[in-house]
Image (cartoon, rainbow, N blue to C red; front, side, top):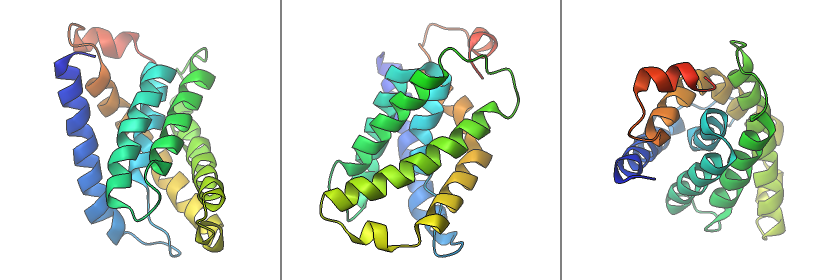
Length: 175
């Protein structure tokens, strides 16, 4: 990745982290709030494939881990696995359908929240399974599905090679 790509990625991660830790925490539905940091690796996997999805998942997860009172690296691990999984499972799918990114984000977000809870419990954080997991899955998956089209464009811009023309990138990408 070029220095410009690193700067763009850091900028996107920091902006989403600030939005998550301010506005995102104020949105509470059924005792749960959206997890916008989880949307970044999903969008990277959709936009550019498994490797970029895993990298974005690690970076976004590590940034989220720095402000969460959870085991360090748990969000990074889940983000890395989800970003890679989304990129790998959708790399050969023609994404010309307008609802494709949203439906993938819905399913991947639900799976990621459950994976996070199970891994947290395995690491000694049993309270992750004591919360209303159905509400958390529903809120996170719904918000991420609604924001997926925008997130795919933003993450595609951040991770796109700097020499690529933006019109060519939009025309030739999977979004």
